[in-house]
Length: 315
Image (cartoon, rainbow, N blue to C red; front, side, top):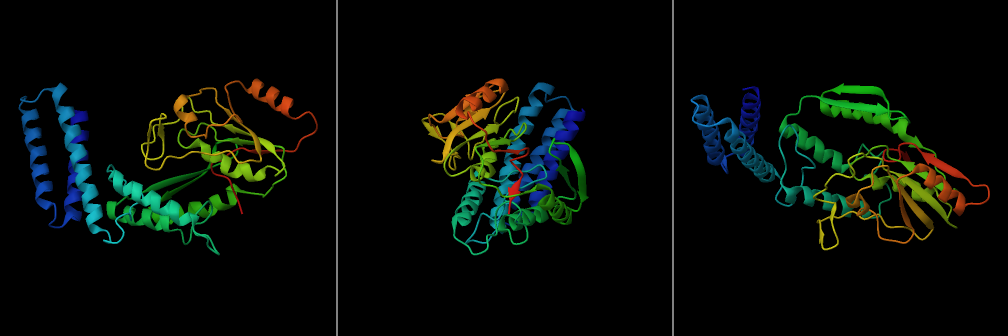
């Protein structure tokens, strides 16, 4: 009964939130959906719906509720910009088209030349992506946010919790100081660790590439997630013949002699995030990584190690 109660309460919560946002546009559909939930509840209580069939029905109803919630969000958005919602939270989901539009707009905006950038690591105050998220949070009604700061070993060293907007602002100020990293650009070898990051671990090279000397060097990307890289329906890859709308492919700059991708748990899907090149080497044994680097570099070398390259930034 606990699973039934949890599922029923979750779906009802989403439907009620929808009704509060919907206006007249899709109000009747939502009320009909709520009535269907009550009918299912009564049938289940009378024993007319079996345990093994109730949860597929609830899953279907939950998907419909989330879809209706996405419609509510888009209807409330400015007609010239239906992508104001970076994420919807609190047990609901945005439509795929909205998420794609938002990401695409942000990506294109970041490419525009600006005297003072507003998006990127460490840029908080005027960041439009932050504004999108805060608008969505206000509409969904998220009450509490918990953010943590980690050290170079991935251990939690500070925790911020409370009202989402104020909590995030406070955590960011601490994070900006904690993750700020000195600029360098003359290294022969750069090691970029992303711990067990299971999503877009390839972003670790963003701080690693500029640290190499322009005459050439090697990068080691550590992406040691036991489950490999998760399926990313917006930016992932699905083989050679099928792709996603905003597929991420990390290219290898000319000054990178070799990119060594190290994981004890290699997965083929994760390889799709790295551009195909004879300069890319995949290894699952750290001793092999060291031996390979020794073969490439016979003399003394300058090395930079980024212990949390996915969240470190230079400024």
